[in-house]
Image 1 (cartoon, one colour):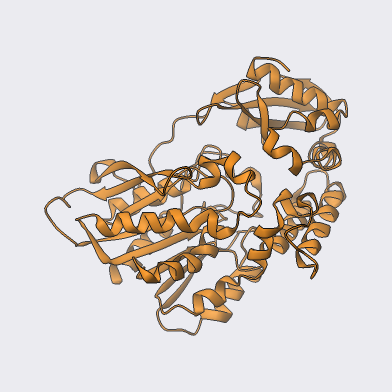
Image 2: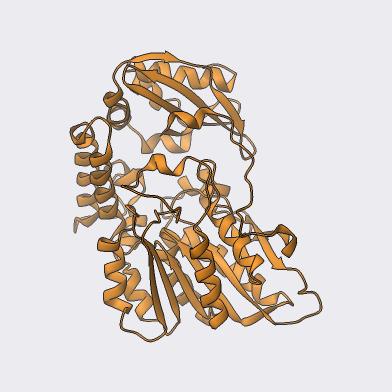
Length: 433
């Protein structure tokens, strides 16, 4: 393998084009190798590229440094029937593979610096880097505090943000966009303190993968409780007005975090943004089926992937699932203890057990957490309760980016910002508390 990240990425493309998927497995970082197989890599590759036809050109990769020791190489690839960018995450001097993504053609362009949304005024607040949790799994975060708070004790409401599924940084960076930074800056401009933090899966991926007993609680709760303690101890923040705002899986887990915080510091309420309520393994199957309907090659090209993830979802529901179940038979190669914990967790029921005000926010065009499959469950459990407000923004997708027509992953790539009406609605709800 090349000692240059660009050369290493091109070698990955060559192995995949030549069908050398067993060799490709060996290029994954050692903690990840048990999670991939030649068959799964082949199926994923073919599902993504077959609709575009044979490769006609592979151009020079764009490489960008990420966290220490990590590099992403974005390779522009031209096919007979279109173009894609294949993004390859590489780690260490050996350039071990830690991830492969298929992105729109425009993703191979240099990432422009993030710009604040129109509703955010950087002069209206200050930001401080913080550390949450204990070594070896401490994470970094950012605390945004409205200006003018100095000398005014215990008067600000505060929100702790919980990112969605995956190894997110504090901003929940997705391509060119930073939804949680949009949210934090918008709320801080409106006079609300906000703390956001990188997930432990982002800060310590090797340690997480090496822990076979890692669960949803481990993914969120320790750092979230540390964040709530930090907010409670800040002199400008009212400890009786601490709120959770979770996006996607972060919204699903928010009731668990709130319950864990009951012993202190307790939260005053929750904001659930595009929060999943359908069991995650079946939500994944549903998303694959939806993506087949918008796939340029037609539904049939994704059928092998749909069949594979369906079989894995059934394995999660199998009464015989145990800690000894091989991880390669389960969704995403995640070990059984994670699924054993998750399949016994009902987010709407957990939320209903809490006596907390809640704001439930949903995008009408969201295909990841949908009005029919997820919001309907929240409504059934909570819709008639006092103190629960539900708002649907019809034009918004899963990231609360406004648009039109069927949503798709390609829609997330262009630089854009969270819907200003969502930001204003959350700020108004918090002010009314």
